[in-house]
Amino acid sequence: MAKYMVTDLTRFSKSDKVCTAVIDVETGVCLRPMPYFKSDNVKELNIQPGTILSGQIELTHRAVNPHIEDASYVDLKFECSASGASFKSILDQTLSDSISTGFGISFDKGQKHIPIGEIAKCSIVTIKVSPQALHIHEDQYKPGKIKASFTDSSCQEYRYLSITDRGFFDYAIKHQADGQLAKVQRFILTQEEIYLRIGVGRQWKIGERDGFWLQVNGIYIFPKCFDEIRTY
Image (cartoon, rainbow, N blue to C red):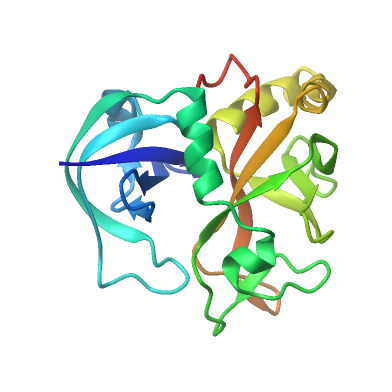
């Protein structure tokens, strides 16, 4: 029976369901179990980044670009929680040099979506950024909401992306509500390495721009993570 490491646990703003992504431990292939899990399933399987699941997850022929990772699943079971070193190793195996390299799409300055009609390599990538290059801040257009901005290794800046990492979002929004969001940023600056899992949502049209919008699916900090939201 195959084993899979959970790399992403992402939230929907108006749903009891969550989206997950896993890496096949043997093959290194990224898969997105479909249909989405409900919160009860997440608790039952103890799903969080770094969880090892066993079972059968197979790519579906119904997958549509860029969401080529969509896969069916059966008989999933919790096996264990990976060590921090093992989790970091999986992230390193999936690492892309930049956002554009990972998706195979050239992003113009300020562009935050894959336009309809363009063919991407995938719908989710891993990049590494310096702690100084990641900023968690209030949405300038929607007070009370939080967003992420960062600069990747190609010096391309991506501003005001939605944070869909469920654990990180819940932690950060709590500090935003308490007026202590700066505490989160200060902690990030004390760390050595930041890995981001950048994905795209389902098709969405904003004005004349129609396509798949970038979002921050995972924010993983080493050597010390936020104890309140996850351990690995």
